[in-house]
Length: 98
Picture 1: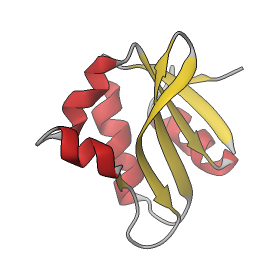
Picture 2: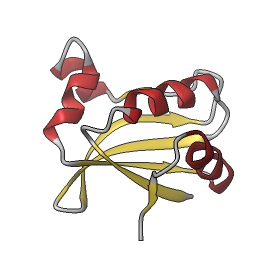
Picture 3: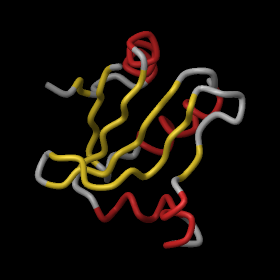
């Protein structure tokens, strides 16, 4: 699995979420980062056909769980290497975590 990071306020983030929904079949984790460390699992997908959805706490905390992304400085997206490569091609400038 490969980690990509993006600023939570980046306009491309919503497009990346949509891209992941449209390309099911690979596990994915979507984390809110605080001080460069994983703080909260926002969304995930197990690689099944139901694709990618918000975590249970996020759906209970806000009517629109995407609003919770703003609580964090950065977001980490953990995906298979081939998905990370495709995301970086579709959304140039996304950083691989070190």
